[in-house]
Amino acid sequence: MEIEAAPTDKSYEKPSGERRGLLLVNTGDGKGKSTAAFGLALRAHGRGKSVRIFQFMKVPSARFGEHRMFESLGIPIEGLGDGFSWKSRDLEQSAQLARDGWERARAAILSGDHFLVVLDEITYPLIYGWLPLEPVLETLAQRPREVHVCMTGRRCPQEIIDVADTVTEMKLIKHAFQAGIPAQRGIED
Image (cartoon, rainbow, N blue to C red):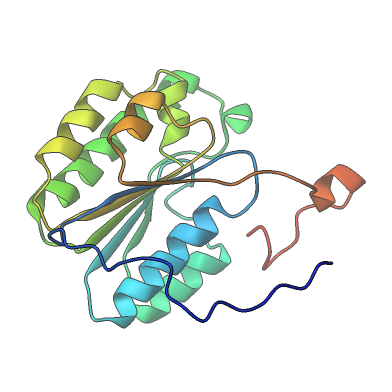
């Protein structure tokens, strides 16, 4: 490891633009997309802001660690799907759940009632063709000026990346699963 000197001068000027709701995207093949979005939700909630989380691939009855914690904090988190596509018994039903879920998420975004709306794993219904891209882009463009939206999932469509304010790509370098270590409670769920 190479040691470097800590900066003693601020390397940037404070931006002079107006504050407004941002579109943030966490994408890529690495771990941490949802985790980062949940951290953002906790940060906003800690500042007294209204947050709403929609999970497009989780079932409504899911009880993962994030569900337990958000429920204890009073942050609404809602599973909209029926699990991973390879577990689905009816992919058309999975697609319909995504479309129905989108209508719920869309209403929450357009209502202006929330400072932050998280659309966790929304890229999957988009890239599987279950959810048309145009209504999503229209909603993002029409949302109230102060509403922030954070979207997660692999292979985010370029059209969303193009209109996003902040895009982070999680890059996979190494994952325990590749070494044969199964998912673990409290880490992956």
